[in-house]
Image 1 (cartoon, one colour):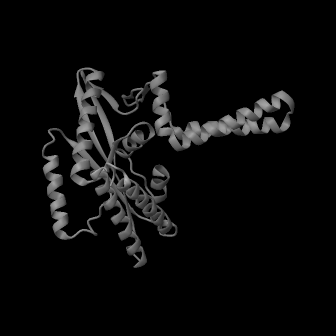
Image 2 (cartoon, rainbow, N blue to C red):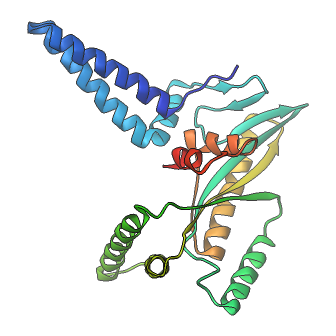
Image 3 (cartoon, helix red, strand yellow):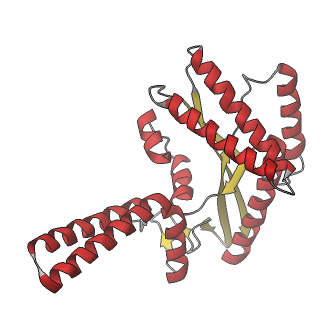
Amino acid sequence: MPIEISPSKFAYGSAAIALLGALGGLSMGGFWGFMSASVGGLGAIIAVLLYKYGYYIIPAITKFTNVVQVTDTGYEIPPSQDVILLKSGNIYYATAFLGVNIFESAIENTQEQNIIYSEYFERAISTIKYAAKYSMMVYVKDISDYRMKVETKRAEIQLKLSREREKPDPDVLKIDRYEKELSMWNAEVQKLSRGYKPMAAVAYVMTTATGITKEAAVASVRNQASELRSVISNAMNVEIAQLSGDEMLRCFEWEYMLPTTIGELKAKIE
């Protein structure tokens, strides 16, 4: 059986400790009551941190303690939790996942812009000498509170764009990306005003490398992931980052079985 280490399970455990500590503090007075209340408060803080930032904290814990996860199917997750390993014969296979945030929509662009966009992507991909898998899941959003979220995102990106422009030495690439994202949110608000039903997409890229040792396979796939991150972000004007911890394991799980409902998918990514 696999050894499962996930931020949500640590968070639930910490929450249980917090509850026990709080109950102990209420039932006892003096020193032990204070200690119980302190344990409860510490558990609550840990629960919040793990729930919100577990994808940073858990890999750091496993790397520090040198914990290796091994599944009954032969897959191994090293302490860094940024790759997945499999040994076949005398060869090691290492797989990495990249998360993609898309800010442009084909519906909003003209036909000529879409053609140019596709050409840039094809030229960029043609420089890569290994296989990569680009996966995307889409669903229709519930617009009950979506508009408020869109307007909040638009305000946030307006602030980022304003701050970047005010810098003595502004980053031109960041400004271009912020402007495109702002344009996307503005278009989204206009479409919602016309009764448009918004679509959402969850996208990630998967790449695999081989090596005669674990270290060689891991180093190779990290190089591939770095190259893919640079190529795809420049070609498609998207934000892309290598995934680790629970986020990486989630994408690995999706390679076998997709979420069956929108609610299940949103519970995984939010």
